[in-house]
Amino acid sequence: MARVWDITSDPGAAIEAAVTAILNGECIVLPTDTIYGIGADAASPDAVQRLLDAKERGRDMPPPVLVAEVAMLRALTDEVTDEMLALAEAFWPGALTMVVPAHQHLNMDLGDRGRTIAVRVPDHDFTRELLRSTGPLAVSSANVSGQPAATTVATAKQQLGKRVRVYLDGGEASESAPSTIIDLTGSPRVLREGRISREELTAVVPAFGEG
Image (cartoon, rainbow, N blue to C red; front, side, top):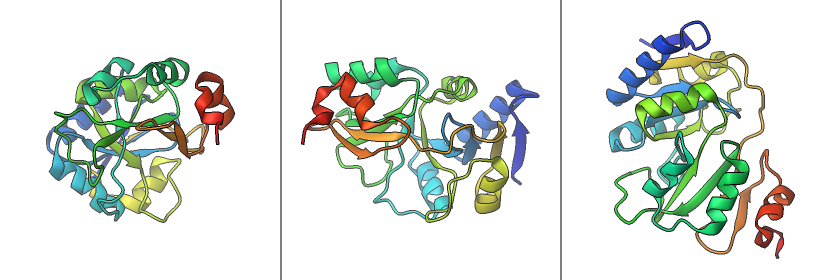
């Protein structure tokens, strides 16, 4: 049975419940600094498939991975560049998702991601504390594909229902704009402009202003 936990009244119990669900290969809904997300153990192919099934989403749209610290970037890619580090310093924690070359020994089946992985450090204290307990989580917006993104737990629960074991309620999302997604596997390019603008990116990495 799905259960809602208020992260403000008892954050410790909420994290414990979420960690238990993740260890059991189940999905959770969690607050982020943008919208609510549905999360699963990034290292478990079965758990990631449950996430995709819950969203009614195909493997052609693999979810990004949320991590607690910038230092975790080196565990996901063995091609850390000066551009990546500059962008991480400028915008992490924050609403920037970077698509980077996946580490050659990375054991994460997130879908048809090829040799890349999308990664972000969220600017949300509770969620980063949760990530320190769970490790990297595959996280996508907490909604059925094609439906509006959830900015409250109630909206997420209405769409996802019993497909999610634990709902972590952090109140209404303060920002409905999604993260900006950039591709750093070749020449830097913007895949989706969200809360962080192209102009802000260009101020850090001028190549974003080319073309």
